[in-house]
Length: 129
Image 1 (cartoon, rainbow, N blue to C red):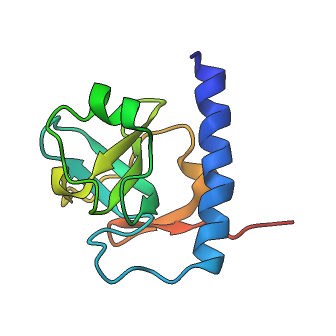
Image 2 (tube, rainbow, N blue to C red; image 1 turned 90 degrees about the vertical axis):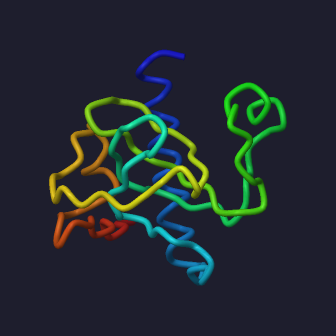
Image 3 (cartoon, rainbow, N blue to C red; image 1 turned 60 degrees about the vertical axis):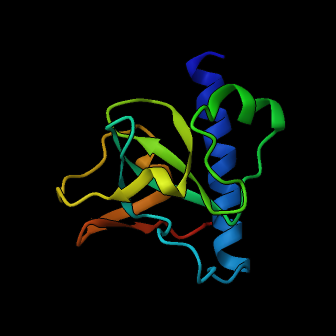
């Protein structure tokens, strides 16, 4: 998959995220929210959350190949734009912690999802028709 394919996939995710935020109540069991900057505890990278799945929602094949630490499937998973990169990751909640650096996330699609950074979290960009 090339960078353009990844960017197109992320843009499609943005549209889904905006629709989800408009039509869905936030789950009380979710520890992190869209726009929150996080740190991955195992792989030591920062990122910003662009979508939340209340439970694992990828394929069995992906889980077996990628989720080697076997995080629980019945807990929240997050779609994250990775700081200093161009890709998106899918991360189990147990592997995340809040980022307390106060620094912005450097990713080319941050402005596609968010309008500004305030108090360590991004504000979701308003959808225009």
